[in-house]
Image 1 (cartoon, rainbow, N blue to C red):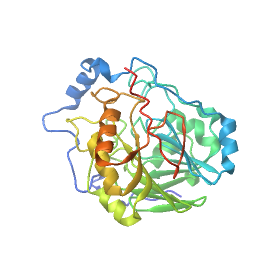
Image 2: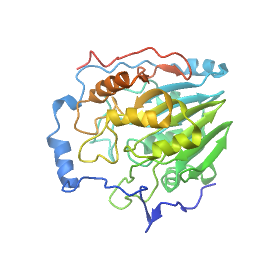
Image 3: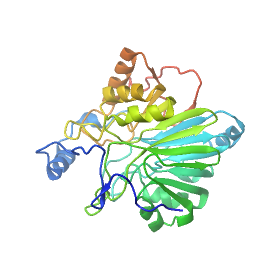
Length: 336
């Protein structure tokens, strides 16, 4: 079921952004950044207070299958449990304590997941945006294999899944703008401006993507990781706007301005996409940059208010009903 690596943006054996962009500013080396990350990060990158988590009861998820509503649950970072019809889907499932090649070191989770991976309902499909450790969790994939019907991934990501026990017939690989219909959901891989790699030898050997989900007349956009680029307008031109956009707001830095968005750029991307409600992701679970942990949420809330946009910031684990009225919830405000 996997597709061959025939992407339009595959050049000399590696995937590239369209148009190409620098992933790091000139003069900023990887070794220098690693040293800064390990030894020079300010204390405010980590919360000292507890992140509120709304536990998810497996029995409640089963009961809610009968609802016709589309439900979203933010498990943390970019892991979103989604219910379309009676079926559950999940994006970028990361349940490990650290996002790193080893569980002995690397960025550590701020809060526990709102439910254990073993308590997830049967998953109709897993959707992976790219192969970075904070989006592709080997332990989670291995744990999910018995209960997942299909894995939908960008080109080149299938080889990791096959190593970890996923059968080839379970995997669908998509290039940008390719679609796959499964269980009544039309899922389309759309462009993002990012990069890939888990080690020294696989830099940009697999594709990165955002995704559009269409079901029951609703459109949901999952942005995953991306710098700000004209692709958001192109996506809106093809799909005509979205009921909700899930866009990253976190892990930005002046050293890598092209592959992650600032909060203000996140709001602009939401506008470009023709989004109704903006739900920020990629924050408040791991520290992957040098800004204070809650700065993305503060700046995003201020910009959304200034531009007149509806911002949805649920507690981790809290149920979201797509299309329902949104009540402001600045849950992070009182946490240091």
